[in-house]
Length: 411
Image (cartoon, rainbow, N blue to C red; front, side, top):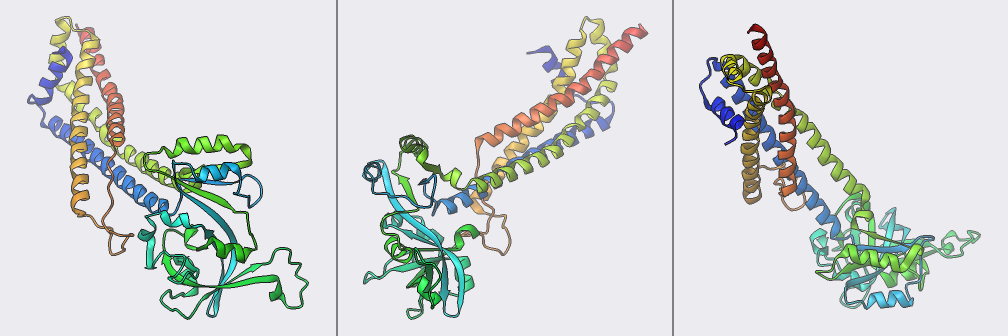
């Protein structure tokens, strides 16, 4: 066994002449343990929230979106897009035509984004999970078009999907309209459609009105072009690799985005919040770790005779420094290991039983704090504690070297 580690281990468990040393060491270890456990738990909770939010967004966000680099629309009936539609790696190929329009229901009206989608959009099996009323269908049993509204749009219009008599009225400016008509309504196309259901995700999506593509073409007067193409790949296909291949094939004429690029702001917010909490808790953990300086300082004073004996036996400054450095690392890393273990056990119990609740507000499906464990977080916490423990123990161990210099001066 390494001499420095052996002596440090004996010092750690040996009886000290001053009981305060044991108390300070225990407090240091306890502080590191609590800080490490808190870091693991908080990071796991943020992971859980991130997975929950992204799962909800991904229920309506495609894996790949193709849109024109210039202009609002493009013609999807080209050789490449027709081949892409038939590609065996593609699970769903949805043509989308979207534009702003005025939506009216009964006596209320508001602007909204009307999104016309082709039938492949309904292949998404996650659509039912975001519905809060009605069903996600775009046609009734007799083939008449129906619309699905976002919750924000429904709340403003007070729409009732179960009312078969009241329909949504959608107004869109006609192409080429000059505004010189005697009757202003002659410059608008007005179509009616029945609401089928209401979905809820987030404000950016909840002002959306999803309708059949054929209905959107009639409303917007667009017979061929689309705003974008949404693609989901087959299970087992790497969406990122497929996206890069499509981007290379299309060149600079089109913009191809994956899910992260479609929701860049969301990913940035989730990532920055997690790192800010990590930094704040790390500062608290540093305070606990640097308590070790007081503990080791008192230990050096308590072990002056031992330092004198070791020095007279030929032990150099390096060995003495390593003894107290190892002592400090043992205290903090022991606290870190127990803290990580406690945090891990707590996270497993929270995943299994959901004991800690978020209150009366029901967040989507469950009001228990979500937990997602990632091995990178455990490595991050251990490395963080080890790094600052080494600095703190190193500063304290330098005091032992100064003691040797004083002893040599006295001799």
